[in-house]
Image (cartoon, rainbow, N blue to C red; front, side, top):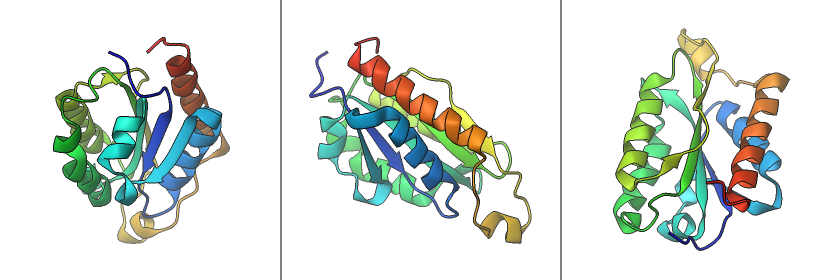
Length: 163
């Protein structure tokens, strides 16, 4: 299948700053072949124009954030059958295990027939009390380095035709 281009689309949503920082780090690592968009502005045209995707969001109440879910709801059917085989990856900011959000995104990606090309990245901020959950969060430098590396790997792999 030929895609419109080999650009990586980094789609993010954040409430506390963690997912935003990780998305921006991945975008930086991906370089000139990447686009960074907040989930609420992503359209079907953006998805169709990209060669692959990196979905970055927090886990809220054991599921992906509402704004990320709304992006999928809004765009699911307009691109269904038109983006099959494209690469994707995920970065989840979690207060505990992050598996609920990861499972939801994986199920949607399966429906779109996307191809996971990097291991899921779940960053556990261990926020359990309301104050900790709502507090601003800053990922560690090591975490941001891993995000940059994931963006670079996705972008480079796409440009080389590896995936």
